[in-house]
Each structure stands twice: as C-alpha cells, then as structure tokens.
Image (cartoon, rainbow, N blue to C red; front, top):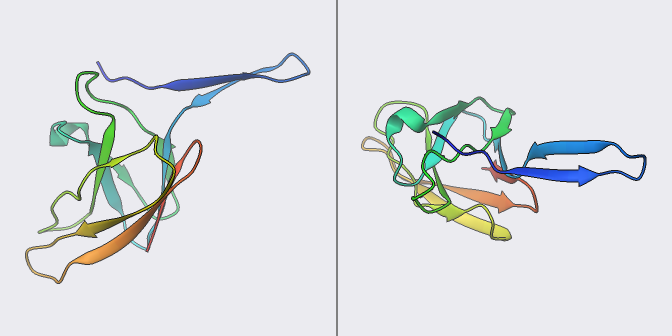
Length: 116
C-alpha cells in the first residue's frame, strides 16, 4: 500500500486542519510525471502545467526521495531529491533525441515547486 504523510494543525478556533505533508506543483510549461525513487513506473503520477497534488510514497522501505521526468518519448527519470530538505536543487533531465534540460526544484516548508 502507498503511504501519504499528513500534517495536522489545530487552529485557535478549535478547527482541525489536515493536509498532505508534501505536495508537488508543476510550474513548467509541459506535463511531468513524478514518483518515489526506486518505485515502479506504475507508481508514477502525472501533473499538468499549473497542477499540484500530494506526494504518495509507494513503499515505506524505499528512501523518501522524488524523481521527475517530462511527458513524452525518450525522457528518462531525473536524479532524486529529498522533499524534506529546504532550498533549491537543480535537476538534469535527459532525452535520447534532445539536448539535456535543467530545471530548478524549489523546496519549501510543506511543498515542492518546480520551475523552468
């Protein structure tokens, strides 16, 4: 079974807010796939430009690392990055028919935003 880490916050008014601890937002002009490093391709999730979703961990025994790849023929998975680390990371995206692209991953407290 996949694992979704949740964060819980209780507001002063007594309201309980439950949300995904980690989300991915696609700030690129093309669709991407993302998955947990080492997970099978069947565990990948698709994100359209401007779309966001929670990170589901396919396997608790695998490292909590994420890989991405653009949608389309010839694209391989990027190197992995930790969602829990702060600050930006630079990923190299490789395609068998194109020159490599580099994308910046902006990791924030409770989310990951990728931008070109």
